[in-house]
Amino acid sequence: MLPGLTTEDIRNGRSKIRNRGIASVLRRIHYMERFGTAWEKIEAEMAAGYPEPSFDGDGPLFCTTLWPHPSFAGSRIPPSRQRGEISGEISGGISGEITGLGRGTVARRRRTILDALAQAGGLDAGALQAQLKIAPRTLDRDLAALRKAGLVVREGSRKTGVYRAVE
Image (cartoon, rainbow, N blue to C red; front, side):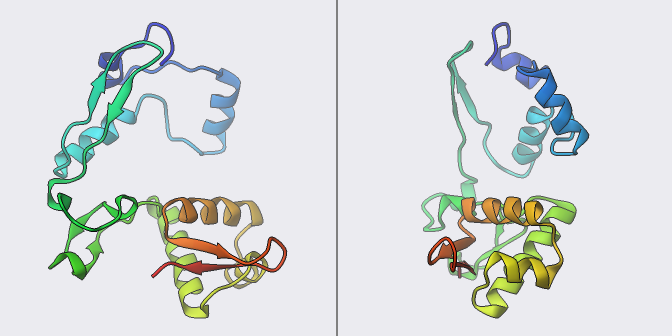
């Protein structure tokens, strides 16, 4: 954290900007909503049943522990997919938002990407871009988020490789 900012400040919605130029650009391109929304999002998750995260220390170095939803305790569901509610048994899958999809139009676009990859069995970025008519940088950003969430894998060489949806 920046000097003068404490975990209590975060809980109260106070934020400090490290680089105003970068923050301004990110806000103008709608990459972020507004400043100081982290605790609002944490509170929404706590209302959905997640335990409150613990903060250890204040100042430039601190540690945050995020706890899984109590319904996932002892499950074999990977942490990257531990979001939403369990429908039926553990093997029944997860309903609700999947981590990595985002929200709103971003989530719908990423769901479309996953569906196209699953249906085709794998596509390269060019074919995926042509099929779905998504801008190259947007597609790169979406594929990176889906890979990070463990929902998509890249197989093959850099030139001839394809993306596949993880089952």
